[in-house]
Amino acid sequence: MRKLALNDEILLNIEKPARYIGNEVNSVMKDPEKVDIRFAMCFPDVYEIGMSHLGIQILYDMFNRRQDVWCERVYSPWIDLDKVMREKQIPLFALESQDPIKEFDFLGITIQYEMCYTNILQILDLSGIPIMAADRSENDPIVIGGGPCTYNPEPLADYFDLFYIGEGETVYGELLDAFKLCRKQGGSRRDYLEMAAGIEGIYVPSFYEVSYHEDGTIEDFYPVNPHAAETIKKQLVLDVSNTYYPEAPVVPFIKVTQDRVVLEIQRGCIRGCRFCQAGMLYRPLRERNVKMLKHYASQMLKNTGHEEISLSSLSSSDYSSLKELVTFLIEEFKGKGINISLPSLRIDAFSLDVMEKVQDVRKSSLTFAPEAGSQRMRDVINKGLTEDEILAGAGEAFEGGWNKVKLYFMLGLPYETKEDRRAVAELADKVARRYYEIPKEQRNGKCQITSSTSFFIPKPFTPFQWARMYTNEEYISYAADVKHAFQEQLNKKSLKYHWHDAEVTVLEGIFARGDRRSGAVILEAYRLGCIYDSWSDYFDYEKWLQAFKNTGIDMAFYNLRERSLDERLPWDFIDIGVSKEFLKREWERAKKAEITPNCKRKCAGCGAGKWKGGICIESKN
Image (cartoon, rainbow, N blue to C red; front, side, top):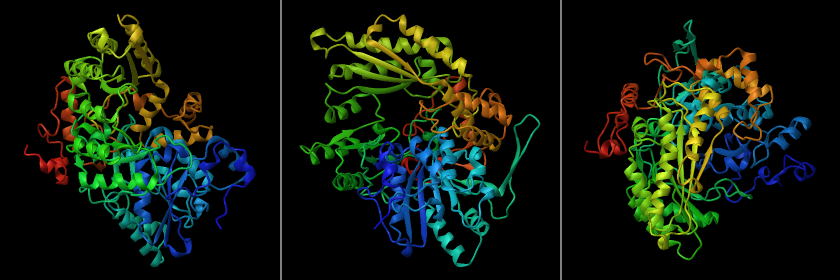
């Protein structure tokens, strides 16, 4: 019988003990004596967040299809259990077996967000695994990082044995087979890392060194091991219809952030927004076959008991078989209480027609992301959306019965002026005005336009990767510009305005474009008690400022300067397919507020065509 790692007394005195007991529906149990490799898959945040992540569900299913591997899950213990585990010296454990993570062969950590970096150190610390990769022994797990933040892995380089650059369905099998072979041959930890370094897409940071100019910028980045490649190439699944996908995802005992079946309908995006990292990283666009999606939708709903299915992608409106898929789901699950969620839709006639089929218009609100208030700024960021299109789309929505609209914007974008910020409120007011153009007897009550602004963060592998950021005080003043503009609008009773925290933005920007030296700040912040930094109740900006002071790292160097186009960037050794020349061209076009057409209209020569897949070979351009 499986013995829990936590006794009843502890479980009864912590919040949500179901986070830690495992044994959920569709979780995988195996005999540890009958497998060759034990892999702990980690999401470094609380259970409810980690269980909502599709990527882990895909890899968990993929690994456990192998007879020789048992993949288990582990999440960050919440604050209350973290304290108990330290006091009672309870090692961090996997949910399925309840065995200590330190006894596993691999600890795989998905890195989705810069503000989870201290939680990664918490995972290592509570597991009893040395935080510094250089301090690990032959008996410690191989710590591997994956996910979007690994496209600039340098701030975490000292804490990971290796990073997997790209989509997980590609070379993991090769990586696991190499581990078995190395162990069979009696190889050491270093022997395995050298074998791993020879696999395309695998980056072993200890096999590289960095030198710096006097001004602090990178002089050179070079391999110091003959097995290490000078360039790490992103791994990509070209045929997303014939690859791994879970038919029976794990179902949590408690309510999680996304308590639903998630159906990924495509990867990549054709739009080319200049601020969007995902839109560049996941090029080219690759659609899943609608027949495959129908099968998985039916199987996942049947095997989980969920009452909602979400169609996931970066731009769902661009999926060519969206109407066919939605029609199938409506007809297949009619009368069965299944709700269909459609995020990432554009406001246009096609999308509204699709939404009308699946939503109760009297209860729903429409979400839309113009990203910038003025047309000039939308052209700067290549949003590919005019004010006329926004107002026409809103008008069609209002006439169809919607009366609540959420609008998302960014502040602090490159080349932004005060007039551009005021235009956020002016656009929201125009949307409200469009509602009141409808005859009163045809309106669905009063309208509510809620606008939210976040602060722009320049990310690696985007045309804006060279842009400067601003101070916390500057960001707050930008939000104040927008707030004052809202107070001047005619329809202000119909308008609401919210803005995000600027302190978190400053830190996220530093680590998004940080180098190896910035990793010392993460460790110092953790030592000072920083944890769950993406949670406002636990985020402590003063401790972070102290960490920068203690380590002598200059915040301004990382976020307040515009990079020159010839500067060597910390992530330049990674090849994502999209060329640096293309990003430079887009940066120059942004300065002139010039639009680049989307991939279906005209190929912009970004470089992703070398993958010979997706829209890059389907397009005739």
